[in-house]
Image (tube, rainbow, N blue to C red; front, side, top):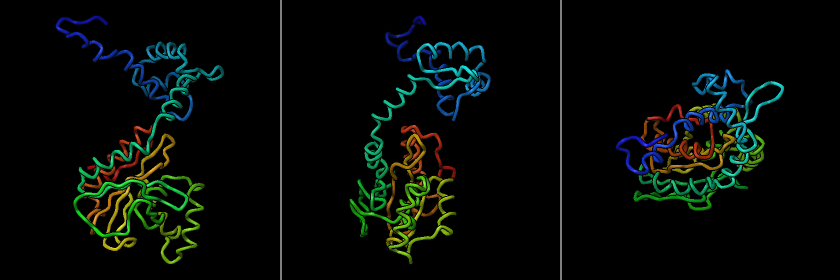
Length: 270
Protein backbone atom coordinates (compact mmCIF):
# COMPACT_ATOMS: atom_id res chain seq x y z
CA UNK A 1 0.00 0.00 0.00
CA UNK A 2 1.36 3.38 -0.92
CA UNK A 3 0.99 6.56 1.06
CA UNK A 4 -1.83 8.77 -0.08
CA UNK A 5 -1.53 12.48 -0.67
CA UNK A 6 -1.82 14.36 2.58
CA UNK A 7 -0.82 11.46 4.78
CA UNK A 8 1.54 12.43 7.54
CA UNK A 9 4.64 10.26 8.08
CA UNK A 10 3.64 7.18 10.02
CA UNK A 11 -0.08 7.34 9.12
CA UNK A 12 0.25 4.20 7.01
CA UNK A 13 1.72 2.25 9.91
CA UNK A 14 -0.98 3.45 12.28
CA UNK A 15 -3.73 2.45 9.84
CA UNK A 16 -2.32 -1.05 9.55
CA UNK A 17 -2.82 -3.46 6.67
CA UNK A 18 -6.47 -4.03 5.86
CA UNK A 19 -5.90 -7.40 4.18
CA UNK A 20 -4.27 -8.76 7.34
CA UNK A 21 -7.22 -7.60 9.44
CA UNK A 22 -9.62 -9.33 7.05
CA UNK A 23 -7.59 -12.52 7.08
CA UNK A 24 -7.59 -12.56 10.89
CA UNK A 25 -11.33 -13.22 10.80
CA UNK A 26 -10.58 -16.73 9.56
CA UNK A 27 -8.30 -17.39 12.52
CA UNK A 28 -10.91 -16.03 14.90
CA UNK A 29 -13.55 -18.38 13.46
CA UNK A 30 -11.21 -21.36 13.85
CA UNK A 31 -10.39 -20.32 17.42
CA UNK A 32 -14.10 -20.21 18.29
CA UNK A 33 -14.87 -23.56 16.64
CA UNK A 34 -14.67 -26.85 18.55
CA UNK A 35 -13.23 -28.77 15.58
CA UNK A 36 -11.86 -28.32 12.09
CA UNK A 37 -14.17 -26.73 9.52
CA UNK A 38 -14.72 -27.23 5.78
CA UNK A 39 -13.90 -24.29 3.53
CA UNK A 40 -17.55 -23.46 2.83
CA UNK A 41 -18.47 -23.24 6.51
CA UNK A 42 -15.29 -21.41 7.48
CA UNK A 43 -15.62 -18.78 4.77
CA UNK A 44 -19.33 -18.23 5.53
CA UNK A 45 -18.68 -17.66 9.22
CA UNK A 46 -15.85 -15.26 8.34
CA UNK A 47 -18.09 -13.39 5.92
CA UNK A 48 -16.01 -13.83 2.77
CA UNK A 49 -16.10 -15.70 -0.52
CA UNK A 50 -14.65 -19.24 -0.46
CA UNK A 51 -12.11 -18.36 -3.19
CA UNK A 52 -10.83 -15.42 -1.14
CA UNK A 53 -10.74 -17.47 2.06
CA UNK A 54 -8.80 -20.21 0.26
CA UNK A 55 -6.03 -17.78 -0.72
CA UNK A 56 -5.65 -16.55 2.84
CA UNK A 57 -5.70 -20.11 4.19
CA UNK A 58 -2.95 -21.16 1.78
CA UNK A 59 -0.69 -18.44 3.18
CA UNK A 60 -1.58 -19.37 6.76
CA UNK A 61 -0.75 -22.99 6.02
CA UNK A 62 2.67 -22.09 4.69
CA UNK A 63 3.33 -20.15 7.88
CA UNK A 64 2.06 -22.87 10.20
CA UNK A 65 -0.94 -20.95 11.55
CA UNK A 66 -3.42 -23.30 9.85
CA UNK A 67 -3.32 -26.97 8.90
CA UNK A 68 -5.57 -29.03 6.62
CA UNK A 69 -6.69 -32.54 7.44
CA UNK A 70 -5.61 -34.80 4.59
CA UNK A 71 -8.63 -37.10 4.96
CA UNK A 72 -11.48 -34.59 5.35
CA UNK A 73 -9.99 -31.44 3.84
CA UNK A 74 -11.14 -29.51 6.92
CA UNK A 75 -9.07 -26.60 8.17
CA UNK A 76 -7.92 -26.19 11.75
CA UNK A 77 -5.38 -24.21 13.75
CA UNK A 78 -1.81 -25.24 13.13
CA UNK A 79 1.37 -25.71 15.13
CA UNK A 80 2.33 -22.04 15.17
CA UNK A 81 -1.14 -21.10 16.44
CA UNK A 82 -0.69 -23.64 19.24
CA UNK A 83 2.71 -22.21 20.19
CA UNK A 84 1.34 -18.67 20.18
CA UNK A 85 -1.62 -19.70 22.33
CA UNK A 86 0.53 -21.51 24.88
CA UNK A 87 2.96 -18.60 25.04
CA UNK A 88 0.11 -16.14 25.64
CA UNK A 89 -1.32 -18.33 28.43
CA UNK A 90 2.10 -18.69 30.07
CA UNK A 91 2.50 -14.89 30.14
CA UNK A 92 -1.05 -14.15 31.26
CA UNK A 93 -1.13 -13.32 34.94
CA UNK A 94 -4.90 -13.23 35.08
CA UNK A 95 -5.27 -12.99 38.85
CA UNK A 96 -2.82 -10.10 39.10
CA UNK A 97 -4.69 -8.22 36.37
CA UNK A 98 -7.97 -8.87 38.15
CA UNK A 99 -6.45 -7.49 41.35
CA UNK A 100 -5.37 -4.35 39.53
CA UNK A 101 -8.96 -3.81 38.38
CA UNK A 102 -10.27 -3.54 41.95
CA UNK A 103 -9.29 0.12 42.35
CA UNK A 104 -11.15 1.13 39.20
CA UNK A 105 -14.17 -1.00 40.10
CA UNK A 106 -14.41 0.45 43.62
CA UNK A 107 -14.06 4.01 42.37
CA UNK A 108 -16.67 3.48 39.67
CA UNK A 109 -19.24 1.91 41.98
CA UNK A 110 -18.47 3.59 45.29
CA UNK A 111 -18.58 0.13 46.85
CA UNK A 112 -15.87 -1.98 48.46
CA UNK A 113 -14.46 -4.45 45.92
CA UNK A 114 -12.70 -7.71 46.72
CA UNK A 115 -10.93 -10.48 44.84
CA UNK A 116 -11.40 -14.11 45.86
CA UNK A 117 -9.67 -17.28 44.72
CA UNK A 118 -10.62 -20.88 45.48
CA UNK A 119 -8.12 -22.22 48.01
CA UNK A 120 -7.98 -25.44 50.00
CA UNK A 121 -10.40 -24.12 52.63
CA UNK A 122 -12.81 -22.52 50.16
CA UNK A 123 -13.27 -19.10 48.49
CA UNK A 124 -10.59 -16.91 50.07
CA UNK A 125 -10.18 -13.12 49.90
CA UNK A 126 -6.73 -12.25 48.55
CA UNK A 127 -7.16 -8.53 47.73
CA UNK A 128 -9.64 -5.79 48.46
CA UNK A 129 -10.17 -2.12 47.76
CA UNK A 130 -12.14 -0.29 50.43
CA UNK A 131 -14.07 2.93 49.89
CA UNK A 132 -15.01 5.77 52.22
CA UNK A 133 -18.29 4.16 53.24
CA UNK A 134 -17.33 2.25 56.40
CA UNK A 135 -19.06 -0.90 57.52
CA UNK A 136 -18.36 -3.34 60.29
CA UNK A 137 -18.17 -6.91 59.11
CA UNK A 138 -16.17 -10.05 59.72
CA UNK A 139 -14.31 -9.84 56.42
CA UNK A 140 -10.63 -9.20 55.87
CA UNK A 141 -7.74 -10.48 53.79
CA UNK A 142 -7.60 -14.23 54.16
CA UNK A 143 -11.27 -14.53 55.08
CA UNK A 144 -12.95 -17.68 53.78
CA UNK A 145 -16.61 -17.62 52.74
CA UNK A 146 -18.95 -20.58 52.21
CA UNK A 147 -19.73 -21.96 48.79
CA UNK A 148 -23.49 -22.33 49.01
CA UNK A 149 -24.64 -19.19 50.88
CA UNK A 150 -22.15 -16.52 49.79
CA UNK A 151 -22.28 -14.61 46.50
CA UNK A 152 -18.63 -15.44 45.86
CA UNK A 153 -19.09 -19.15 46.48
CA UNK A 154 -22.08 -19.30 44.16
CA UNK A 155 -20.20 -17.47 41.40
CA UNK A 156 -17.42 -20.04 41.65
CA UNK A 157 -19.72 -23.07 41.89
CA UNK A 158 -21.58 -22.02 38.76
CA UNK A 159 -18.41 -21.93 36.65
CA UNK A 160 -16.26 -24.73 38.01
CA UNK A 161 -16.43 -28.47 37.25
CA UNK A 162 -17.93 -30.80 39.83
CA UNK A 163 -14.61 -32.61 40.17
CA UNK A 164 -13.15 -29.43 41.69
CA UNK A 165 -16.06 -28.37 43.89
CA UNK A 166 -17.53 -31.69 45.08
CA UNK A 167 -15.00 -32.33 47.88
CA UNK A 168 -15.38 -28.77 49.20
CA UNK A 169 -19.18 -28.96 49.04
CA UNK A 170 -19.19 -32.28 50.88
CA UNK A 171 -17.00 -30.89 53.64
CA UNK A 172 -19.09 -27.71 53.96
CA UNK A 173 -22.31 -29.70 54.31
CA UNK A 174 -20.75 -32.01 56.87
CA UNK A 175 -19.43 -29.13 58.97
CA UNK A 176 -22.50 -26.88 58.70
CA UNK A 177 -25.51 -29.10 57.89
CA UNK A 178 -28.00 -26.51 59.19
CA UNK A 179 -26.62 -23.65 57.05
CA UNK A 180 -25.25 -25.18 53.83
CA UNK A 181 -27.73 -25.50 50.99
CA UNK A 182 -28.55 -28.87 49.49
CA UNK A 183 -28.52 -29.64 45.78
CA UNK A 184 -32.27 -29.13 45.38
CA UNK A 185 -32.08 -25.54 46.63
CA UNK A 186 -28.73 -24.80 45.04
CA UNK A 187 -29.48 -26.03 41.51
CA UNK A 188 -31.89 -23.22 40.45
CA UNK A 189 -29.65 -20.59 42.05
CA UNK A 190 -26.64 -21.73 40.04
CA UNK A 191 -28.69 -21.94 36.84
CA UNK A 192 -29.57 -18.26 37.23
CA UNK A 193 -25.95 -17.36 37.95
CA UNK A 194 -24.83 -19.13 34.78
CA UNK A 195 -27.38 -17.19 32.76
CA UNK A 196 -26.77 -13.79 34.34
CA UNK A 197 -23.09 -13.92 35.25
CA UNK A 198 -23.89 -12.38 38.64
CA UNK A 199 -24.40 -14.12 41.99
CA UNK A 200 -26.10 -12.40 44.92
CA UNK A 201 -26.32 -12.93 48.66
CA UNK A 202 -28.29 -10.92 51.21
CA UNK A 203 -27.50 -10.62 54.91
CA UNK A 204 -28.07 -14.32 55.60
CA UNK A 205 -24.34 -15.03 55.77
CA UNK A 206 -23.09 -11.69 57.18
CA UNK A 207 -25.80 -9.74 59.03
CA UNK A 208 -26.35 -6.25 57.60
CA UNK A 209 -24.10 -6.83 54.58
CA UNK A 210 -25.08 -7.77 51.03
CA UNK A 211 -22.78 -8.91 48.26
CA UNK A 212 -22.73 -9.56 44.54
CA UNK A 213 -20.02 -11.51 42.75
CA UNK A 214 -19.00 -12.24 39.16
CA UNK A 215 -16.62 -14.95 37.96
CA UNK A 216 -13.49 -14.18 35.96
CA UNK A 217 -13.14 -17.02 33.45
CA UNK A 218 -10.11 -18.53 31.74
CA UNK A 219 -9.68 -19.87 28.23
CA UNK A 220 -11.51 -23.05 29.25
CA UNK A 221 -14.48 -20.93 30.40
CA UNK A 222 -13.85 -21.92 34.01
CA UNK A 223 -13.65 -19.60 37.00
CA UNK A 224 -10.13 -18.68 38.08
CA UNK A 225 -11.16 -15.97 40.54
CA UNK A 226 -14.18 -13.85 41.43
CA UNK A 227 -14.77 -10.12 41.71
CA UNK A 228 -17.07 -9.31 44.61
CA UNK A 229 -18.77 -6.10 45.78
CA UNK A 230 -19.69 -5.69 49.45
CA UNK A 231 -21.98 -3.03 50.93
CA UNK A 232 -24.30 -2.42 53.89
CA UNK A 233 -28.00 -3.02 53.40
CA UNK A 234 -29.70 -4.88 50.57
CA UNK A 235 -29.32 -2.42 47.67
CA UNK A 236 -26.74 -4.51 45.82
CA UNK A 237 -29.18 -7.39 45.50
CA UNK A 238 -31.56 -5.27 43.39
CA UNK A 239 -31.22 -6.36 39.77
CA UNK A 240 -31.15 -2.82 38.38
CA UNK A 241 -28.42 -1.53 40.71
CA UNK A 242 -25.74 0.19 38.56
CA UNK A 243 -22.93 -1.39 40.59
CA UNK A 244 -24.06 -4.83 39.35
CA UNK A 245 -23.76 -3.71 35.74
CA UNK A 246 -20.26 -2.35 36.34
CA UNK A 247 -19.23 -5.57 38.09
CA UNK A 248 -20.48 -7.72 35.22
CA UNK A 249 -18.71 -5.55 32.66
CA UNK A 250 -15.37 -5.71 34.50
CA UNK A 251 -15.61 -9.49 34.90
CA UNK A 252 -16.48 -10.00 31.23
CA UNK A 253 -13.63 -7.75 30.07
CA UNK A 254 -11.14 -9.66 32.20
CA UNK A 255 -12.55 -13.01 31.05
CA UNK A 256 -12.35 -11.96 27.42
CA UNK A 257 -8.71 -10.95 27.86
CA UNK A 258 -8.05 -14.43 29.31
CA UNK A 259 -9.40 -16.07 26.16
CA UNK A 260 -12.86 -17.00 27.49
CA UNK A 261 -15.43 -17.49 24.74
CA UNK A 262 -18.63 -18.20 26.70
CA UNK A 263 -19.29 -14.94 28.51
CA UNK A 264 -22.40 -14.81 30.71
CA UNK A 265 -24.23 -11.58 31.34
CA UNK A 266 -27.75 -11.67 29.91
CA UNK A 267 -29.27 -10.24 33.09
CA UNK A 268 -26.82 -7.57 34.22
CA UNK A 269 -26.33 -5.36 31.15
CA UNK A 270 -27.50 -1.79 31.52
